[in-house]
Structure formats: structure tokens, C-alpha cells
Image (cartoon, rainbow, N blue to C red; front, side, top):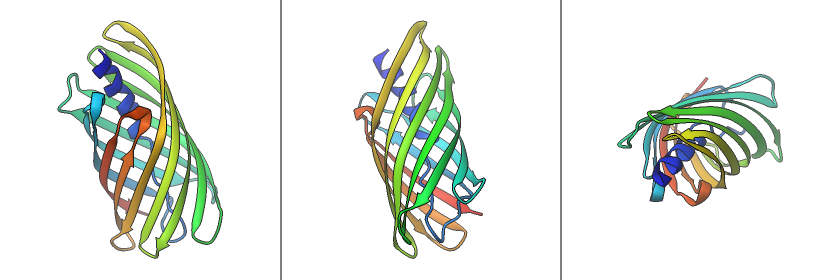
Length: 188
């Protein structure tokens, strides 16, 4: 059951998190990719996530992820809202809140995440970002009532292939469980 709880917490936390852009990269984006967790939560998932700017300093997020090679298969959906401000011409800080739900055979969890992060444009085509997240979750796993939380850092990179597409990669250590991701992003 511990593996199932870690797997559910993993998929709760991975999909809403998005590395947003500084100057030159749009806040309006969609990304598809793969994420893999290691340790007790040896989980792989395919995700689709996106963001849309509402104003210059407010954005909305949404995401969907499905695990594979994990039993039971878990599905996660989340929505969020965030705010950001520039700290310099090349850097920006953000705060984001997301709420989501994870479901699967014998699993029904609700999750809330708060993330604070910084994005820095290293070159015109290369961004480095880092964040710290806290996730709380509650619900039922295999008939047991579950309440818990996880927290930890994440780092990522974004490489702009051209004005429309970018490659993303990340390393997350939420709850002491490591995960890596690789994605393709379209900026609008």
C-alpha cells in the first residue's frame, strides 16, 4: 500500500507544475512529455499541461497525466492559478496554487499544491528554473483513508528550438522521491 500511496502522491504533484517563461517566451503554452519517478514511487506517466496568461502578472494552469507500467493505472487532472513578477530583465519569480484529483482502481485522492519558484534566462534560447513545492493530499487508497503531505525542490531547463517550440527537462525531489521529465512545448 505504501507504494500505491507514493505513486498517487507522485502523480498528484507532477502534472500541474510548469516552468514558466521570462522575457521572450510566452505564458501561453502547451506541453506534452514523459515523467518517471524512482524509489518507492517507481511510476512513469505521460502528461499534457498548459498555461494561459490572464494579465501580465496572472496565469492559469491545467494538466492531465496518466501512469503506465504501474498497477493500478492512475489518472490525474488539475487546475491552478499563479502570479509572477520580474526581479530583473532576465529573471522572474512566481507563486502558484493548484488543485487536482487522482483516480484509479481503489484510488481517489484530492491534492492541493503551493509552489514558489524563480526563472532565469541564461541566454536568449536557454532558461534555468528552480522551485519549491508543498503538496497535501487526502482521500482513499485500497479502502483506507489517507491524509498526507509532501514537499521538496525542483530544477529545470528550457531550450528554445525556435520561436514556437522548446524542449524541457526537469528533476524533482518532492517528498524525498526523485523524478525526471522530458517534454516538448509549444509557445503561442
